[in-house]
Every structure is written in C-alpha cells, then in structure tokens.
Amino acid sequence: MADHYDDLETHDHAKREASLFKRLPEILNQAVKAPAYAERLKGIDLDLITSREALAALPVLRKSELPGLQKAAPPFGGFVSGTPGSFGRLFTSPGPIFEPEPETPDPWRSARGLFAAGFRRGDVVLNTFSYHLTPGGFIMDSGARALGCAVIPAGPGNTEQQFELIEAYRPVAYCGTPDFLKILLDGAASSGRDVSSIKRALVSGAAFPKSLQEEFSARGIEAYQAYATADLGFIAYETSAREGLVVNEDIIVEIVRPGTGDPVPEGDVGEIVVTTLDPRHPFVRLALGDLTAAMSGSSPCGRTNMRIKGWMGRADQATKVKGMFVRPEQVAEIGRRHPELGRLRLVVTREGETDVMTLMAETDSPNDALATSLGTTLQNILKLKGLVTFVSPESLPNDGKAIADDRKFG
Image (cartoon, rainbow, N blue to C red):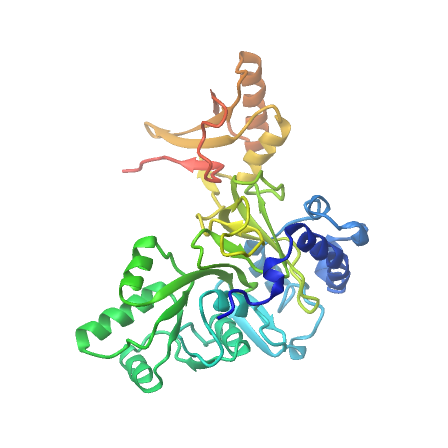
C-alpha cells in the first residue's frame, strides 16, 4: 500500500515554497478580476508578491466580516468574479456565508487527507456529514470519489437507518463527527447491530481528544482528524505519525498575531490565515478566527509540508469593559508602539462593582517611565484607563490570548 498520495507530499520544503510563491502572483491577478479584491489590493504591484514577507503586507480578510460583506453585495460580497451559474453547486453555512463549488474533481482538496487516513480505491465509505445546504457532505464525498471509493450519502442522524445501511453495504470507512461515530458504536452495541465492517475513519467538526481516539482504536477503528472549513475545504490533516496536522498542498497557511496580519514566530500560538491557489475562487489571506501554532521540522511519516498543532481555540477575544468593547487588535497596536516589550495580555477583573483592566507586559527592563508611557498608550488606544504590570520575559502563557476576562459575576 502506498504511503503517500503523490510525490508532492515529500517534496523538498524549500522547493515547495518556491513553487507556491512563483504561482501566487498569477492567482492574485486572477483575484482582482473580482471587484472587492480589486479595491482591497488597489495600487499593489501583485507581480512582486513572491515571498511570505511580501504576502504578509497584504490586508487580511476576516471570515467574521463575510456575512456583512455578502449581504451588502450578494451573493459573494464581490470576492468572486464568476456568476453563480458558472459553478457546480451553491451552498450556505452559518453566518450566513455563501459558498460556490467549482465543477472540478475534488474541489475541496479532501482526497489527500482521506488517503492519509487509509481510504483507498474500492472502499465503501459511510459519509454522515450533512448534504443539506452546507458543503460538509460534499467536501468528503468529492474527495472519496476522487480516490475511487463508493460513497453512502447517509448524512447525520437516524441511527436505525444508518444501521441498515451499514449491515447492507458493509462500509469499511466512516466520515463524520467523532461524536456521531461514538453514538453509532454505542447504539450498535446496545441493540445488537453489526457495524464491525468499519475499520477506519476521518473525523472533523468537533473536538477529538486522545481518549476518544484510543476508545475507537480499542473497538477496531483507526480514526484520524482533519481541520477543514466550509469555505476552504481541507486545510490540514492528521497522518499515521500522530504528530500534529500536515498542511494541505496548494494552499499557503500563515499563523498571525490575533487581530493583526503580522506573522508570529514559529511555535507561538496565533490565528490561522489561509491563501488558496484556486484561480476560480481564490481566497487571499482569509483569517479564520481559529488559533493554532506551527510545529518545527517535518512529520515522521515523510510528509514535508508545514505542520500545525490543530485547533487550539478561538482568536476572537473581544470583551466589553465599562460598556466599551476592547479587542485583540487594540492590544496588538500597543505592542507595535512599544516594540521593546515581549508578549502582552490585557486582564479584565472585577473589584467591587467596577471593571478593572491590567495590561501585563513582558520586559527585562521595567521602570517607572516605561510604565507611565505604556499607561498613556493604553488609554489613547482603548479610550479607557488601566493599570500596567511588568512581568519577566517568556512568563506569559503561549496560548494566543491577547485578552483574558477573569471577571466573576454574581
């Protein structure tokens, strides 16, 4: 059995980077055929965007902005140059966010992740992701069929009918949330139904703790996880090495300081930003609001692409203090104005019936003048007064949090 989907997975990392950024200007020039990208990238020589440093200078498009932008310019917010009728399928996902699916094989780039989970030509796959309005079911379906698998479009729920399908078709593989797979296994055990044909699984859409992975393994199922979204498809996937998630091919993943577009050092927790090299429907620096950290080195499985630690929480930490919102990007701006500092964290507490903000700042040279200057910057940017506390370098948690709301009410 082949270990890798294709030779791309074992390419020299530097050669992969060079290939991605050689192709990027062409994708960007395709993107600006859409009016929203034309406005966002106006005045930029796109032919010069040939490195991560150059890409990091482009504006970030926040996924949280898409519902408003699409409502103002339906259906795609002006970020797609083609008409709705030029695509194969049209979806919606919570937000609402509207997504088109190109008429190409494996348009969501999921086959590679399914292959890493052990799916192979001739396998029968039970796909329990929803086929109703959202792209979830089709993301897995298209990738499995691109591998040569037969797919049962089961969708979620209705366990009795699922048992009938499993006993009739004897699928060897499962796609869906880990929670629903456990429901199926527990339900089959209690009702005497035979689901023993399922030997491997690709799960997504919910937390997949090691304890649940081990439970599935004890029941004869090797399950792997994928990080995917309804707009981008497969971003990263787990492999047999079980060491983080390998980033998919043909996309560029950056990890940035929450609230900014500034890349963080390798290993620091930050927000996931993705650029896709899809000429029909490119995304340029789409910030997903999810936190992760890049891992050093290559996977022991032989795949050489960037690895991430998986989902580590949400980057959107906006908090209301004394009736006003404070946001991670404001804390990041404080850091930009004081580059001599390390990590920053704004801690919100409650004293009596009053909100209290304390800016914790890493420095090896604390002094009163710096405290006064930092307090002034804090008030100028947040429009609220706060305290300043200095801590030693590398003492704040590396968890991507710019704001910690520690208030206790009632």
